[in-house]
Amino acid sequence: MKKIYLDFAATTPVDPKVLQAMKPYFAQKFGNASEQHSLGQEAREAIETSRNKIANFLGASNNEIIFTGSATESINLSHKGLLEALASSGMKKFHIITSQVEHKAMLETCKHLEKLGWANVTYLPVDKFGMVSVTDIENATTEHTVLVSIMYVNNEVGTIQPIKEIGNLLIKLNKRRTVNHEPRILFHTDATQAIQYLDCNVDRLGIDFLSLTGHKIYAPKGVGALFVRSGTPLIRQMDGGGQELKLRSGTENVPYIVGLGKAVEVSAKCKVQRVKSIRSLQKLLISRILQFPGVKLTGHPIKRAPHIVSFVVNNVEGEALVLMLSAAGIMVSTGSACTSNSLEPSHVLTAMGVSAELSHGSVRFSLGKHTTEKEINDAVRIFEEIVQKLRLMAPQI
Amino acid sequence: MGVIKDPSGQAIVGNPRCGDVMKFYIKVGKDIKKGEYLKDVKFQTLGCGAAIATSSMITVLVKGKPLKEAEKVTKKAIAEALGGLPAIKMHCSVLADEGLKKAIENYRKKS
Image (cartoon, rainbow over all chains, first blue to last red; front, side):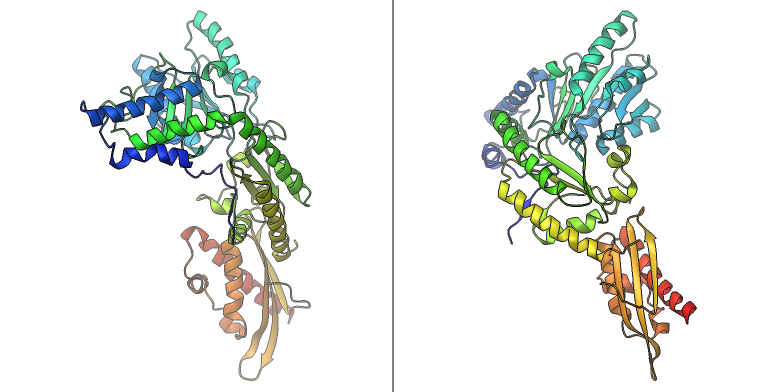
């Protein structure tokens, strides 16, 4: 049976060029980058080359990029490290603004900060497309606000948040705040799902912190990065040998860091072409799926990342659908409560006002750079067969 | 899986808000040796893989059995027959167990 993988928003395979670039750093060029000898310096050079690639891609400087183990770690470091730094400079009250549709890495980090009593957090609602309102952000700011943290692309429904507009708003607010001797509001974005497709220039977007991960962009799992604008207060959350500009101790994971740099480079090279081809496949998939009765698109109809197609299917439970699709060789994802450890429906769909009944039938198809038109057509045909089967199986209520 | 037309008893359990709905249909037969027994059992399920599996398994376990024995099938027996269920999915076997018992109850009330 031929397998059709349509879960690229969950993870991607390692690109052969990336793997090739990583290979020498396991057994031959295995040096510790903190050592002065030639093997150590070879590793150091590899790390710095990779850092430079990522800095170039983001329009940042080399000393603004910190390698981490994941986007989750980047988010934890930026949020906790910022508050700790501000607290140690004498500030006492902190307010963070984020949204209800963020990834768990963000929501749990914010909840943790609340639990520690370090910050008050506003979780902004979204509209029915999953979009945050820039006006809501402005209205939510207080004299204690120090951070706005909004994801670039929602991982479940693909909606693109107005990052540039938020950046502009904060630049405007910060001018006024500087005059009033109020703290600057910093801007963090989780760009995990955006790196391959959208403008990630930190100056154009007005971003102070940007989190990203390797495994969504054809690098391996277990490596990520954090952009921290030069001069931004930040205290390390991992103590030790002082690696990564003294902000993230631990011997550098050289092959993976090399892999991340290579993946960003490969991704940047053919961005325009890739966006165009994946966008056209996305259009095909959406138009075909919506022909099927009882299926509704979730997320924004236009402002959505090209690789994510998400929808809800009525009178079908998402996990059963995913398992049956998997048995037929098709790999997709669901936000159904049955697949979560909490048995709660997707917090993203709930925030968008989708009923619990419908959320149970949520499905996400996500496309990758090698996805073909034939794969889409085959997947849709099998999807329709299985939905019909499951609906026959369901009792009429 | 499916529907029994003109069933001796039927019951629906769960609700779509929670994501799992099961409907059981039973056809009761009478036999000199067994007394009242389940001549046929069918189910319809809207739910996850475990919900479908447990509702299917209970029909396999009780088909042909006397009512009194069928009522004694436990959620544990269903889970064991499936080779075990993850802790978080145990509620599905509870629902299947409850559904069948209610279908038998529905039959008794009618007769």
